[in-house]
Image (cartoon, rainbow, N blue to C red; front, side, top):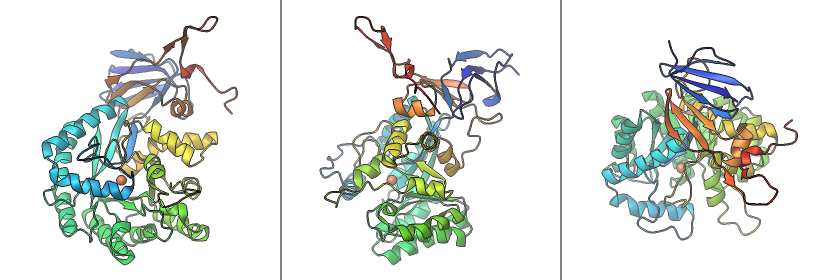
Length: 431
Ligand code: FE2
């Protein structure tokens, strides 16, 4: 079969150079140097990094691009954000949510972000967000894998109809069971919600992803219950704890017990570095806590860790641009992940690691997998993070769906080169 596309002279995230990637019938047919066949379309990657698409495993697409509606978050805190979202919810209309989400998805495609797990608030009896995002999921399916989480934002038990609405949302086709145990009225209600939600997921054969312990309170320990319930109902490998910021403030001895329990239960961890550094530590004077969960330590214990974006121009966060390299860069800095191996992990944390959490079928740069690629204006994964590299080509199932010209600046300095771009700079010794 003639490949519909061959990308020549690629550098892969694992460091292999000079690779050709042939895509036939929407799948990767071959990856090796100097493929003899001729593709219908040929792209010269010029030694640039070719990666599988970016994956954002923690996002809120029902709220995205709503910045300023109905007003701005003055304190910038999580709680004012939740209050503000509560003011906006009754004003939402399905068409408007669909429109905003589709605009965001266009931006995501331009950044090579082709798989998104979005939480969708189910604490609204009309289930406006659910209806809208199910429609968006259908519309973007040819180019984005959108997975939806039924998220009881105001508390499964604290909000009067959340439990009933969560079940309705799952019946309508929402994919994943969400939760927010630290926001319930009491610790015991939080633990009960974790138990009930894991049972629902087990009965329905679904994945779980809870906002878990998104607080600076070191005694918020719902992750312990989540790991326990995961094992009790047999959901190993199918459960993710999002945020886990309380772990930043926990006692070291307790964490030394907790991490092996998470690893044993195969619970995945999702940190949201941009949002964590912005929202946590707000009751501190100085020194102020960073709030991001213990990423290096979880890695050491074999816990699969991913970075999510969480928010983009919404009641909680007024910046963002669907750029998972920005997320990786912030995670790298906040987690002090400075070793080259650790920087490489930060790239995995926005590609392969979240793909594992979403259980994306056919993801990855291997023959037989989906013909989905991003060609970046960078020599390797670390440089991609350093430069938030331009996505030269975004390819889905063998077709180019977005192109951005290489970034280059014309210099007007006597005796200096005429053109400059960050990708011309390399470390003296990459070892
Ligand atoms: Fe979130």
